[in-house]
Image (cartoon, rainbow, N blue to C red; front, side):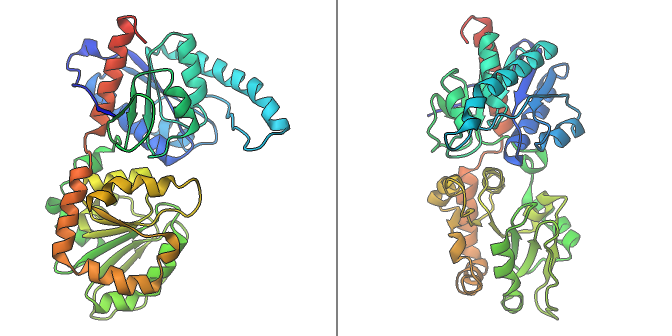
Length: 380
């Protein structure tokens, strides 16, 4: 594991056009867009386009940000042997042709992949075209596409230091500027006013992301009055369609329920402690802005959410709580004492910030410049 190299500083250091491949989930699309914005800032005339599928989030988010999106067919790998496995080579060949067409149409000089269905054909198409490849892996446990791609290039950036991937160097997560530039103390008063919260009480932000987290929602909904009586105000973002009516807390601390926060950076500015899932984006945003957190990994999948939080938890910037243990009893016995311990929260905040990386977009852009320079020198 090595750190990313020095920044490129001249316009000639940057390719004239890049193709960014990735999509499906926010975990892939968010860093893709953050890198696109940074590259556009560094070289305003750079041609930036994305490769994705018609069914992923990128189909909506990439054009909405103003970048062209080229489509490739989705090539899922069956988990078991069967007829679908026999169809994979033909489907993959079609996806590689679509990726090659996107490279030709955009004049891309570097291909950057973020994992997901379209990344494997993008890597293979780039290798056919003898173009430099850059890889960014969001999760602590890399996916199949990036494990394959990392064998094709030395330019591999990871979000977490603990990620085991060929040629890996930690660059952190490219974050949107609203988060990477957030000054929490400076915006705290604005944030508290926005959500109708007081400035003299500890504030807990509970969020399960846009889809919500049933376990978090139910555990906290059952302890609204206890939290209020303890003097803890809560901003609870339940997820779309999952709001509940919190009991009246009277003169006690407020309990604010929202389905969605359209300015999550203000939620972060208001919070002293966060309870959340441990998706890679969430872990990186919270550590970048120095927020102590209780991470509750999804109990399904291959365990990557637990690994995502491992570095910041080991540093003392967060706690890891298994999903089954996040109960109303846990809220009463663990969360309330933690949220009212200002000294402990302050030390956790410093530990989280020490692990966090605010400049992931620049570090990944630097990796693009290094790959481009190597390609021009004849070493892909």
